[in-house]
Length: 179
Image (cartoon, rainbow, N blue to C red; front, side, top):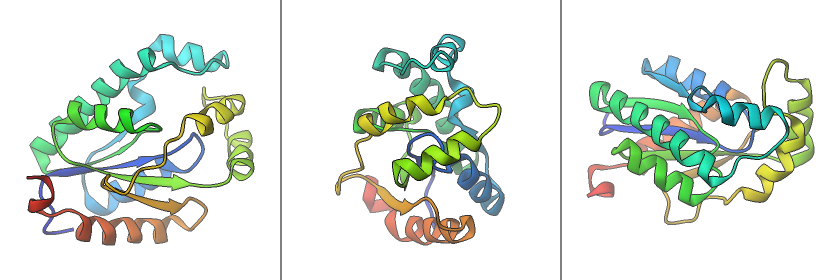
């Protein structure tokens, strides 16, 4: 992907929507670092989720700051990074971008609750129980028109999603868009 100024692409959405799968494909295609947001949660937050308790904003701020800092460092070092982060609320996306200190492009992987619940039920060895899915959908603020964001249906083949993201990113971000 040429012509992109330093930035990061962040796959966002509720648990089970395919964020990790998409970032793996993007990072491989772009030969850049990928960050899994789940890896930046504090142990107490993971324990809370395992117990079926949704995180509160106070739990999320340090997590977003840690993830944002890692994304920003990678972009400053190599020019491009990819990340997966639920980024359910606009305030979370804004906090993540402030912490990164570089422009972020958000890709919402959207889908219906019932189908995503089926994905979660089939997923093994993840601390996020399907019982928290309703709280995630309740918290989800889909990106507004003034955000650098693209919404895609999460059930499409990952190669198609990757192609759409790359085409959109190429067109969406210019040097002028973040002056």
